[in-house]
Length: 222
Image (cartoon, rainbow, N blue to C red; front, side):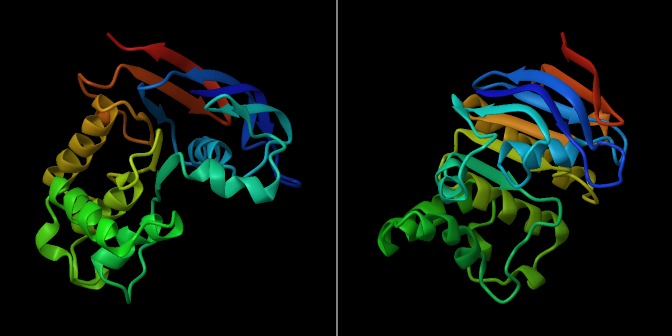
């Protein structure tokens, strides 16, 4: 599902953000990518959804080599991918409904189907009662769940989550991880980037450790 072959990415005049990374993440796998701040975790996710291009090596997503993918084809790639950003990236003046619906609007869904699907996914994350609220009226944990709903609403093949539990209380962390777990059970490939190895649970069997842009551990966890 996701393959990186000898991938490097170097910013001008900087130490490489990624250095000769080779790894493969299978369909339906739940993988935790961990390491200290600056290890290359966010960069790795950005390469997978083509927000960055590698300076060396090949990136293959769902059988498609995206290394030299034309800009015009990137939106089609991203239809397969749900991204949960570290800073949520919610539209503050729009309602929860509007924020989650945005993905389906881009895909050309009709209003009736959008409203039905958005209500369903918000109910799944426990926020159907907040459908008319704006993000500024929500707690941090609720905003994170809205971001999760937006990423999941079109049932993507791949879900990428960048520090999805950062700055959340324990109850909110558990809820977010449970949502990701359920998505993995339904068949989505889930990749979570985090500095917190304690998030590794019984249901997460794969850990990839980055250090200074290189993979130093890549193992199935019993």
